[in-house]
Length: 431
Image (cartoon, rainbow, N blue to C red):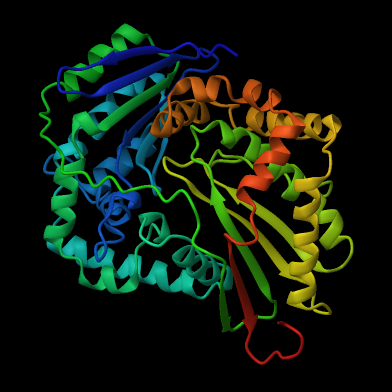
């Protein structure tokens, strides 16, 4: 794989990354903004996600329907995503239509309208989305656990925002957030596909070069390196199953510990893809917790979640309890497996299998032009492109001793949050 990039920067601070891929006559254009729920103040949660929605509502030059139809007529597709650390927008379309994507993104970087009627319409949409999530036990459980896992850092908040904030936010709040963060100096344009770098740079300068940047008033939260002391949260509600979530602090993505933790996650709960588009799912049936908990009929399912974040985040293990077993027995078996991985030798064969699985997932998640453009911006959101280019090699360099030390450092019984969701009307041994 050729990972070489061409980089440019405009006078207004806009950064541009270009990667030529001539396997098909298409191009993927991504614009990444250095703003996510991580940069939101208490009482203003959900701003970044809501602003993302408003970017599809039209500008003074382009109506919402015009933007949508112009992409569809070209046979392209577009979308956007908000995370704790960033907000991004993309179009994938014929290479000959790159100018259309750049013109559209430059227009909505500074020209979105935020009409009051559209703001209220979108408030209803987002509140409905939030209420739908609240009907899901796993969402409720994860939200409760993260609120306990972080004392102050905004990673404690859901990207969609708290319901009381969504009811109180105003059009002025949204537009002020947009004006502050949506500017060239806080943006990265990533282009991948069948393009000429010099021509792509000229088009980017044509459409973005005249936009001015002003100093942004950006909240940079203080990282929380350690979890508070052991805590537990119990919830109940509709449903048929009991769910358990256990959270520990996890290293930030540009830490050396992150790569050892990635192997640790794979050994415990199975490999997972960092690419939001996924692809090529690999079974976790060989993972230690699947064998010890699901095969032994203590749990119905097991999974893990490790995200690549700017600041230290959280690693969670999610379990669905077997109906004939107790929560206490399930947690005891989980603790036993964690103690084993912290104290007993890990074989090189296990490490090699985890690296092989990660390499396969990495290949699946990098197999098209859209994914390649995604990785260019994603890696730069918390590190730089070398993080992506060297990912597999850095995993392969992790030793069994590093994995064991990482487990001992992070998976501490005195620094975790346990959450239990019990369906209404059930009784018995769930302690």
